[in-house]
Amino acid sequence: MIHELRIYRFHPGQKKVFLKEFKKAKSFMKKYGITFVAAWENTEREDEFVWLRSFANSKARDTAIAAYYASPEWAKIVGALRPTIRRREVRLMNALPYSTVK
Image 1 (cartoon, rainbow, N blue to C red):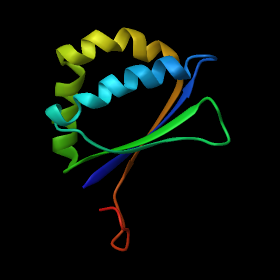
Image 2: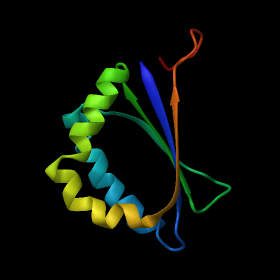
Image 3: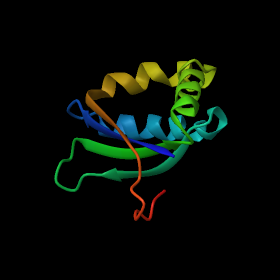
Image 4: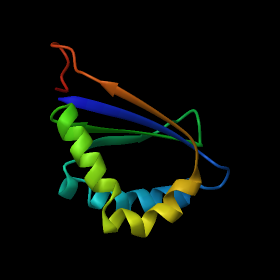
């Protein structure tokens, strides 16, 4: 299992727009092989959103991401979603044996 931690920082005043569009984006992740795990708002940074998604392995990740970002659903929202994000960080992670999240 591969987990992908994604950290976004928004342009001023764009968080509300992002959250509305992200809810739409989340609604079709599973259809394309992306497992949504969780999302958080940073209590110390109003402009930061953190979320986690997972995939069975690297090949499954590559396949799912290609299908998701080529989907008609994504094409409908990308124009409203992407401009809200000022900075994006992505980290690929493997769980350690003693982790409660596998």
